[in-house]
Length: 112
Image (cartoon, rainbow, N blue to C red; front, side, top):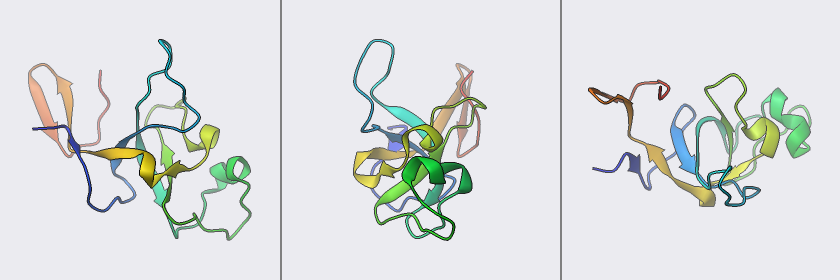
């Protein structure tokens, strides 16, 4: 079973695997990223992302775009690289391995 579900609706709160357009493959920068969706198309652009995407108060996220946030305090996310295109999403995370002895399904957790 794959830890990522391809297809299906994406919702705020889902953890997703995606390829940022500004990311180039290198040894120090992985091609794929995992972040949590903070907002989806049609929702207001979060205040902390407005400056990066050139949005003003009351602006909405454009079609087929997502705002993502990392769970870690100093995560690189939409505050740094802007919107994520739905076309760059591999899929939604189905489960997270917490340790070698546990498998947690559908929980919000970080990988130790």
